[in-house]
Length: 80
Image (cartoon, rainbow, N blue to C red):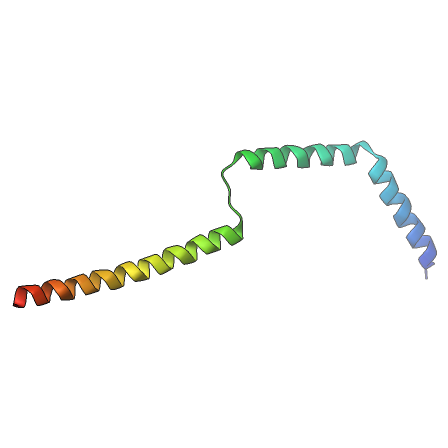
């Protein structure tokens, strides 16, 4: 079996090599460009979307109830 210390040392050296390499800079730049592009879009968080979806659902329910009430009142008015 391989020595755990040996594997940990190799892992640490690989992590350091990647952190010090140009690939890390490319990753940072790509993330920065992506973040910059996303901020230009008109996006909302999932939480905000869910809140608005619930609000819309509640509004539709109230509107449906009011429409039914108006129909009942109009029917009562025409019968008198």
